[in-house]
Length: 409
Length: 136
Image (cartoon, rainbow over all chains, first blue to last red; front, side):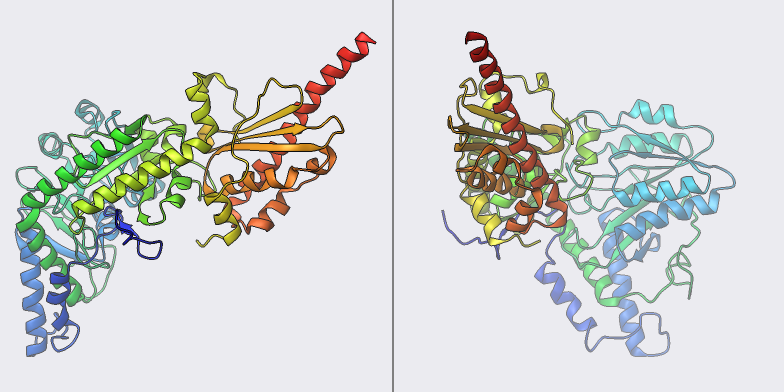
């Protein structure tokens, strides 16, 4: 086992948090910081035109990865803004006709908080629960739709557990009921094939830095036929068809475009490669560590995600031992609340198991050696900490932990 | 968040890990916290007839700060009388390990664990004393 990974240079296994910008993306962006610095909205000279041309190529590249046309893509600062704009923008535009929103308890905070903000403005919000595997029940969705329902917002891929919602089926239900369908696809773009027409998606949010593009850029797909109208959140010069004012950051836009182009080209091969890695990782861990549990559906899941509970070992304590691995945990020991991940809770994972979870995210720059290294390190550390764990002792002695009256603090 | 050297040392090389026979009359056991909260400490003390803590062992389920806090207190209580051990404050633990504010609860739990172990020992030996009284 090579000791190439250290605390100050840990093995990166947190690809759902962010992805490194692909060097090819950085290269494509380069000229737009320096000689091609024009404002893409300047219509009077070469600098403006070349920047505008580059932006329009990028718009086409972004549209292409989701099966849209370029006129339907507007650039934003990231998926958080896209989600805010999609949900609040539609709500503000159509709010006097319909005032009901449907979303899901496991959505990203920016979707949940946008919905909460609209509740303050008088909207009704239904938060659908998920099944044990993290997926919504389509019958729940059908049952929740009323004649007041304006929009359904369901994420394509969950950021913690990587599960893929049945977008095509959700889209069909929404279209049938004449309800807008928005999906937060920040974790899905470039990982799973997306087609806004086949899936009847009306709005789709994209993040630059989750797809090997730069941070600070994202996009929102807004359907033109049948047309979806939004009230803008940011007012100004009327850029982006009036839906999002502000000068476009040409280098970032170019980077997002290039990132989408690369992701589309490499998606199938990359998915296959990562699928093999995940299997190797899971097999390796299962072989060396008893009593581990995968959180979320394993089949309907992006290949680069694994979320596992290592029973009897607290996640943050585990991460501290794995200082040469950059991973994240569903434990929330650092937060004042002491409450573990709301996503894992929504699956019905009990708090004691949620506290023991790690999210392992693999991606474009992960190698097979990395997987071997991670398996060795995690197995070693989990087994060390189990030797320290009174819960492990009790479980080995056949004591039912639920039979003990714990003093919850 | 950077942890102190002391904390990392106790986490990586925990002292006095293990268990003692809970049924033994000179052993007091404190089990505090809850799995659902992400912290459980089991702290055991072995007390001499003179009332001195001769040995201490722990096992902890929790974050690095919880493990380090319990490891530290096993060192601290050894050689102390029950009253001295019972006077250890969570603030002393937090200071020694330079716990960040979000981790103060780990030191509180460690203090609770000592107190619980002492209490357990006293209730056991109290019962024993009663028996002796009855025998006399």
